[in-house]
Length: 479
Image (tube, rainbow, N blue to C red; front, side, top):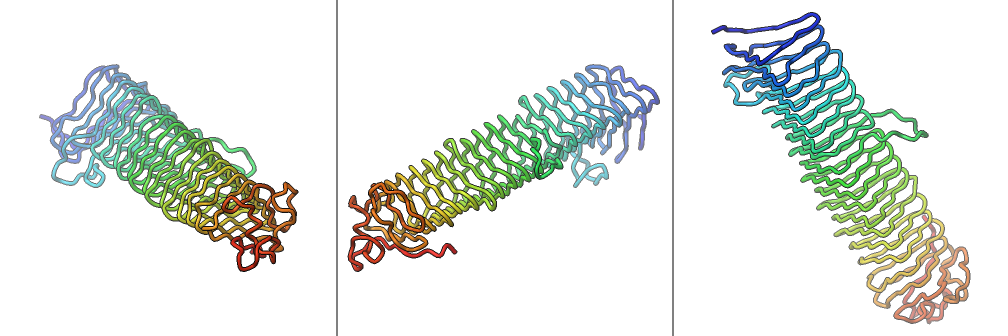
């Protein structure tokens, strides 16, 4: 038997392996290297590996590597490195495996006492119908782009994929690890199933001008993502379509551009989204045990049957508008909807103990509120139409001009309506045009099915004696 500490096979222009090669008789912490300064070529169907009771680092590399087809590279007692130093790397119907039991002695070729598997390409990297296994960690990287289809990646601890020109993971590719990290340039696409039992993280980078139309940094479509904790960081646009994200812990999205989630669901312990441009939820479902915070600089649109269910919900557009159309928001405690410009609700269904809506202009129509307290504030106009507010305990609204049409109140509610001058406009419920600075009852505004002006004090422009008024109209300072 031959005993090796370091064994290197090398070639200058071309190194060809024409059949099976198994290395044995290796001491602990040995290195076996197959390296070519030119091209490394392995015959189709060949098996190359390590048969040793000791821990071994197995390296294979070439300046270029011919496509590997039906190839098996294995090391059951140590780690594997496969690299292309100057070109692309392609694996088809192949298996690379760094698995098996570990020696008692710690090996410098193991990370945290576990095997690792590393695959690197100077240019592009392609996997097709292949299996990549590691009983420890796995590192996959390319200076170009990476494409994977119908391939299984399994790492017992950490999976890190870093692809400078982006990646496409599709067609029943699966990636499983305890901690899973994908880092890449813009144009990345995920169309597969990914599992990070402890954590799952994406990071995409693409430098963009603040006035330009950004590239799609990451697209997740037709995918299932499972995680302990989930995080996504993107300097360009993020899109998610017909996909599901399930996180046992918190989920975090930080996007420097636009975010679009359509026909998809997110289930997590809590959800935080920080978006620098527009955020669009289109037929999206978000469910959390804790809070949902969606904060961005530009606009927020929740539409097409979207739903958000959480303990608390905050939607905030610090420099833009918010639109909620044909969608549902439900919270155990608090819902806040805060827009810097226009806040629009149309056929929305809102349920919470406390609801606050705030914007420069607020326009609400054909919506349902199930809440103990409803508070709505606008700097300019606040318009409400076709609302049944009889089930609410406390109602407070204030704006420069308040415009109400087809609104039903109940005498069991505490009702406070504020405007710039604190008066009910003349000719209430007559169809008259709204008057700036007033509380305007345009038409069909009632309390217990009676004209609402009959429950407003004469001091405030109504018909009721001051001590019998139910609706309190006050002067709003808009501060």
